Structures are given as C-alpha cells and as structure tokens.
Image (cartoon, rainbow, N blue to C red; front, side, top):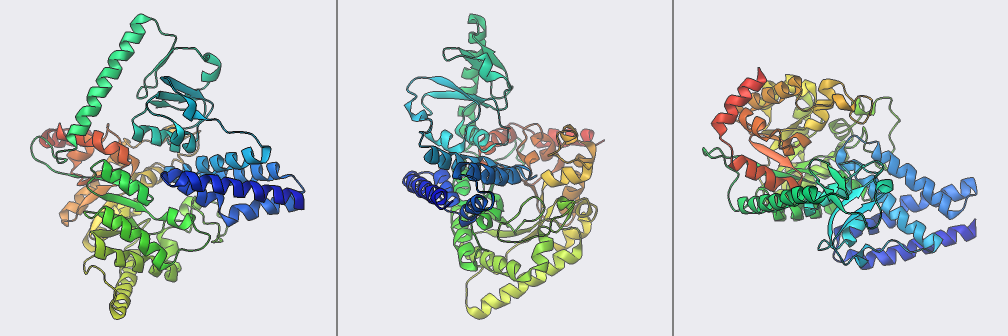
Length: 509
C-alpha cells in the first residue's frame, strides 16, 4: 500500500503543478487547484486505500464519486454544480495515475458543433470560441456548470440529449437551437436556411441586449426596477459588473466556507467581502451562512437527519453557534465601510429569530466601535422569504426588517410539498402555481405597506416568462445569474408597467 500511496501523491503533485500553471488567468483552474490541494480529499483517498487494500485508481474513483454524488443530491442548484468540478479534478488525477493524455480541445481549428458524452468546466475553458459554434452532450442537466458557462459565453448548448452519440458521425452536419432544444442531423437546404435565419435573428437580438445595457432598467412608462445578480465568489461579482448589473442581490457565502478545511476567520472573510463591496459599490447583499440541510462542511460534524431540508440549518445553526455567527457578522460589518453592504438572513420562521439576529448584530457593532474598527453606521438587515411561515407573517416581519428578498427555490418546494430533486414528482415543482404567485404577491404587498423594498433572488427572477408578471406585481429588485441580466433588462425596457400591472391583477384572480 505504501507504493500505491506514493504513486497517488506523485500524481497529485503533478496535477497541482499543472493547475497552478493554468490558474494564472482562469478562475476555474484556480478553484480546481484549491480542490486538488484539499487535505480532506487526500486523506479520504489514502484512508480508502489503507482500509480496503485497493489500488490508487479505485480509491480515487470511489471517494471522488461519493463526494460528487453528495453535492449532486443537494437541492441548491448552485451547489449541484460543484459535483462536475469534483469529477473534473478526479479525471485529471486519474489521467496522471494511468499515464494517459486528456482530450485536447484546443486543437480544433475549424467551425464545429462539439458532440460529447459529457463536458467538464475545464473542457469549456480550453475551447476556442472562434471555432466552437455550439455543443451537445448526451449526459448532464440544464443547471450543470458547463451549461451555465455556455449560456454566459453566448454559445448554444444542449445537454442531456439521449442517444446523440449513436445518431451522429464525425462528418455529420448538425443544426441546433439551444433555446427550443431542436436538433436536425444532416438537414436539407430548406432546414439549413431556416436555422440560418434563426442564427441571424439571434445575433440581432444579442446586439439589442448589448445596446440596452447603456440605458437603465426602466419601463416605457417610466417605472424603474433594480436588476442585480447572484454570486458565490469574487469572479461571479466581476462577471455581473461586466453585464452592467446594478449590484449583487445575493452573495452566497457557503463557498467561502467550503473552500477551507476550517471555519474561515474574520480576517479571511473580511478580505473577500471587502473586495466584493469595492467591485459592487451600489449594492452587495450578503446572505449569512446557509449550511445544513443539503449543504455540509467536511470539518463540521452534523448528525444525520431523516429530513434535512426541515432540519438544523441556516439561521438555526447561526443562532445556536453564536461564535460562528458573530465572526461572520463582524466581517460583513467591517466590509460595509467599502460599499453599500446589506445583511440577508436565511430560513426565518419567527420574529424571535429576527430579533435575536438583530441583537447579536448590535453586539458586534458595539465590539467593533470599542476596537476602533471602521464600519457603516447603517447596514440594512433583511429577511430571505423562503418558508410558508415567513409568508404568512410577512406583515409582522415587514415592520421589523429593512428589506425582503424572496427565495423562490426553497419557497416553491415548501409551499407545494414537492422535492424538486425527486424525479417522480419534479414535474409538480412549478413557480407559476397559483399558490406560489399569491404568496409572492402577498410578500410584495406587505413590504410596500411598510415602505420596505422587496426583491427576489430565486430562479424565477431570471425566468423571462415571469418578468412581466413580477414587474406587474410590483417587485422592486430582480436578482439572477449574471448572464440573464441583459435579456431581462431588454424585456423590461420594452414593457409598460401599467399594462403589466393590469395583467398581473387578472392572473392573480
């Protein structure tokens, strides 16, 4: 086993050296280098070899797949993406162990549609976008990291196209529509002309979206809203600013914790939050730690729960582990000296939770003042509305909070009693269900009665089918994936608020 362990450690060092060279100009490879260096992953693989007497390849395959599957089972779509990253890093380890070369997509030198069983984020990073006009994979889902990257890069992508590998050959001609999912193999002249017409219209549309970025997100009749982006790291913040987002409507802090092998210190968190505030000075809404449920930290032992979605998670952990909560709050408050920072509290079901969180925040303010550390005197504290209890108590919450942000991903699941990760019932997960729409409207109305802004940071905010409806309901802020911002802005600029409000009234009845 010593020989196998040495072989694995040698492969690991080779991967690290390779990734460090690639990381200089690429955020994906920087995160991969951090994963490859993760002591928890290394220890898990070495322990598997010792316990089962297996070789390095098998230990790597089993541990990496178990880790990836754990992320894949999570309900948060953003967290699911990490499973592909883990498999991608494992693929690099495996290539070194087997002494074989990885696919070199950089050798593509003519226009192609790339068809593959699956692609990983590092594959995307190696593609020459001047030649790759689209890609189709047999496996994967629409929320995969690669799919999202393709969307942000403006490349048509279809994932999960069952049987595509057996249906095409190297010299097949393919027409594809990334929006409708239509694929035509070896099209005739009429079909090619139809798709070329679609491509020309798509290019015109992209130019209109780019031009729209020069103007505010305001309807034809003068009603303005804020268009923000969701982010999980500093690279996401930079991407959002590149799309002319107003600010960051949801900064997820989980990845900062997941990238470490320990709870990040106040200084480690402060450095990240400060940089994010500088990059997005108009608005940076930082959600406090939302672990538990489907999001675990390898260094934080939690009891196995029968129903983790309803268990010890988010604000419940923060209020019980006060020292962790205060460390994060102090870092956020200090970052507020560098931009318009807001604090967002997840998974609240009672006013007592909000009051206790506010009390602890005030404690942190007093400590920082005594220590002579700078922070903004007014840092808004908001409630993430994602539980039915919070919806039903919206009027009371609105009197004691500074803003609302509706988290539709969990809210839909809880309202409809549908596990969206369960294929048997996933079709019932519907953001346009009357109960969901009425809940959203109730929260907006409650917030406006108390003169607080109401935003939305769930996937529904970036769904173009919902834009007019949410606008008509009076939503003040839409926060979405950075790549969705230009399209939603263009849509809003071409709407009439009066007309959308009238239509929303009809829909709600």
